Length: 561
Figure 1 (cartoon, rainbow, N blue to C red):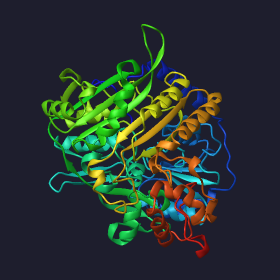
Figure 2: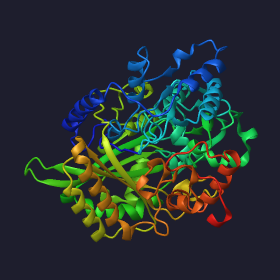
Figure 3: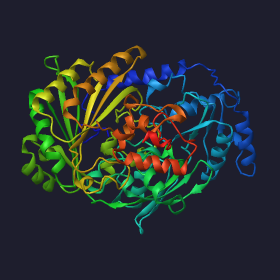
Figure 4: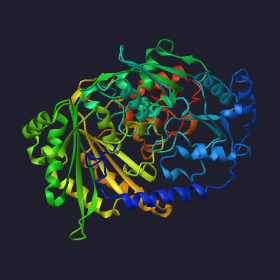
């Protein structure tokens, strides 16, 4: 969840020049991809199978299928492949070369795609928004098909019943906009980045500005539609309680192709309050971040106070320093907010003029990186180009995540600042998001996502880079920082978040992965819920058709347990 630093939506890290360079780099990289690409294996039988199964459909197969070898669709193939790659380090990866991209126009197309791909021994990678941190939704070392769901983005909001159906290809922004068009006192606890697809977000958990009040997105799913490995279209009743449990936080790509979610809507006030205040080391940032750990997780459920940390250059001296931006949304008015802060965190020094009362949809714009006065319709764009929302959504990066169960001492925080200052300006950031509130009330076993009571906050570190030759040093830095945090973070196991996937934690051994092997990463994401996920996987997909480098494995010989 990326935060911004002022109520008008501008960043605190002075990244404008960086973003221009990143944009130029993105264009350069796109045009540097070779015009031809070949994967081993013949996909013609897959296309023939699909053509036969869709022959009675009103749309031609050419409307939904793209290949790199067909001259009539080659340019469209590359456009579709690139447009949803948000981590540019995968733009040149040789594994990012599907034999076929299918962009279904109706949910009824999905069963045929699954059956034909399975019959022809082609793996499926399902892409919703393309924000997968390790690119697993659009890369594979073996012949594969991308099922890109961006056309499946219909949203139906029922205000009277306080529910809605959202197709998997919709984005956070599209969902928020659709809800906002119906009512200004209704919301949903999805994520903060508008371009993230709901498919991956919901199936991995999904948190955002409302999660301390209402829990995760996955906590508020009441039904779903999914196509399994046999091509059956299932809903909550027909898939059964175990599968429905698994896909809400256990990663949908391990179990099938989820086509739509039924969500439970929540209430929000007509007026909420937002603020962002930044403090440098010279302005007591170390002490404030240290105190924040003791305060933010225990504030009112109506309050989210997160921190975004980076480095800036002090104009008067030209020296670099660390800057912590405290970003907040409060489900209430300014007077209530100021009273709360005066009681619990007066050291932060938030003033009335730092705060802004807005509608909830404007707060969504704020957390999305936009000016709150801009049109909410901007949220519907999958690739927004808004000059006043100085926000790079595409760059090369590596990220790692931790969960904290006790505060980091001041000396530990000072060591973090030292490492942060070793990175080039604007090439790294730290994100600290408090838990507590409703998250502490929901049992760890309610859904596969286990990070509940006892969690103070989530810590994410990201390293960005522009040129490919900078990648090695960037990986070294982010892994070094991760190593430094070891004494302060969760242990036995050291925990992570599926939606911030990290292949450093371990990868599967193809379709022969055992429970023991997969536990290296599985217990980190799911804790004790991992074993139940394996049982569900074995039941719904015993041949392990839906698999990737960190998919849930099937149960093998008893000795593996």
